[in-house]
Length: 202
Length: 65
Image 1 (cartoon, chains in turn red, cyan):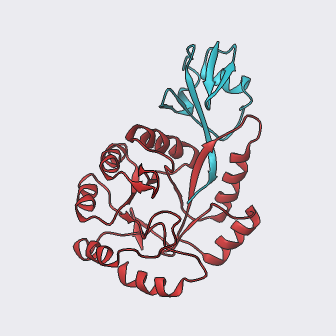
Image 2 (image 1 turned 120 degrees about the horizontal axis):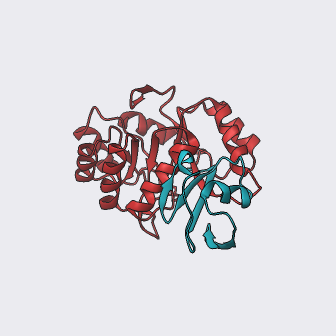
């Protein structure tokens, strides 16, 4: 899979959250050999330097890093967080999340398109976290995105690919666009059926 | 002066962002900063004045999905 001119060693992207320890995360990356790892930003307490330690761990993986704008609810928050992420992670890549609905953490697709346009104009390489909506996809591509990142299901729900028809329609309408299915896909314990489905979608 | 740092009120004597980061214990830290919701790049911290009541956001790398 290619994303913004970069050939990824694997179509699998791996999140770095919720591991019991940095050692277990490092093992997961070593065994999973992902094409990229996703990371985030948090408020840093004075003197702790926890962020520095995490950054050094991630840099040692030697795989592309994809920071996100998790927790952002407005265009302004998302743009500012993306700018901050670009400085600390030293990459133009950004997984753009603008959450519009609290219960399902559903993307605010209107704010998403607006934020994507601003960030693309500033030279970011945007991976927009979106619903599987053809019109939203079209607007995101028109705003300068070269990759789409539709949800499989709501974040953390583990429901798998909730709307296979919608995902297949996206793939059919945009056959040349790299597409990463994000969120809600399920546990690593049950990867096989979804891997097979995914291979037909990517 | 009083400013808000990551939503906590702090009393500082520094007048510029670069000095405030040192005073607040972030010297040399891998952090990004924003004042009143606007990103301030590392290269601009030295000349960036702080005003009473400013909201300073200090973010660092963390795990994410």
